[in-house]
Amino acid sequence: MSKKHKNFSADSVGKKVEVSENATFYFGKENYKWMLIGLALIILGFILMMGADANTVDGKFDPNVWNEDIFSIRRIRIAPMLVIAGFIVEIYAILKRNK
Image 1 (spheres, rainbow, N blue to C red):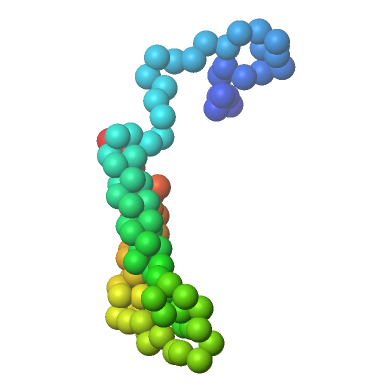
Image 2 (image 1 turned 120 degrees about the horizontal axis):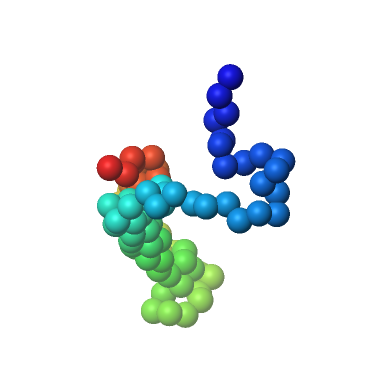
């Protein structure tokens, strides 16, 4: 029976264990690039969702006025789709194998 972990045993506790030279990180430059793209999409989506609320006109609260801009295509369709796309890109970046 062969050991899976040759460098780890009860005898090696407290001793310095050598790390092989070809040990690398799981994520490479490509993964980080995709993570930044996904983060940018998420941030852009949340920025596009921002704006005045339902009772704000010209920057002032007025309970007698209804602002229809809360139902704009930008806030209801485009911004949430960008956030979802950003999360999908993040999942891809995490699961992408480093070559």
